[in-house]
Image 1 (cartoon, helix red, strand yellow):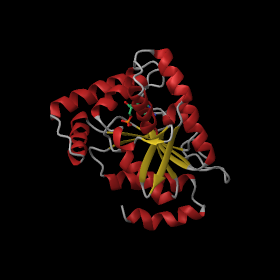
Image 2 (tube, rainbow, N blue to C red):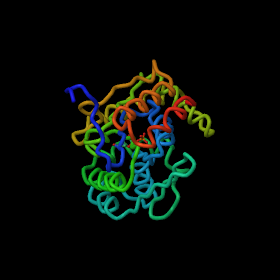
Image 3 (cartoon, rainbow, N blue to C red):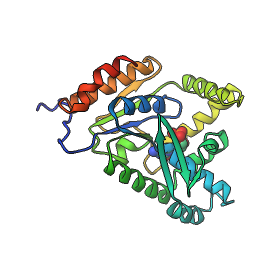
Length: 249
Ligand code: DC
């Protein structure tokens, strides 16, 4: 193997694909499609941090009371279920999926996710999930911290303007109208916090393939990741089934 060859997957290891990048770059759409094409479990780690933020709000815990947030983070049961491409998020058995995508939760989740005990707990849950099954896991620190040995690491990025436009449309589809300049400011502030924090800052992992969704379509990005998967694992039965599915995206 030359130093430039892609890493190969040991025959028995479940495939791990790590996708990181800023809010609104299209990670979820891409990760879901890749997971479906490869028969892997899609894991949205942002939803886990969001579920914790929802519990913090619901229990009336002050977000800056780090000790109280840590107690909650250590005891809350956060659980993801993916059915037919959709992910349901449960916190202590309650389905919180409809409540965690609001701008209020987005803005609270970012500072909470910078608290070390919160990260320690979420990373442990995420690593346990990846140990049980093959995964496409998306977030901010998947390639750098959660799955540093994943054979496929992608950092998906896009310009702030495009990401804000995407968020505007997503919120509109859910019946929420927000001014574009306000959303742009909020996303820029989240970028700065998620990328500037001391612990597990958002950044491309060493060896990550950097893809820009300003210039690539979703289909292009998915096809590129499926190509990487074939290079890592060219002989598994799943890889033979990949090519026809890839054409559909
Ligand atoms: O991907 P998202 O927008 O749903 O993530 C919500 C917040 O959670 C985001 O501001 C940063 C944080 N997050 C994180 O710190 N680490 C992750 N692996 C995933 C999300």
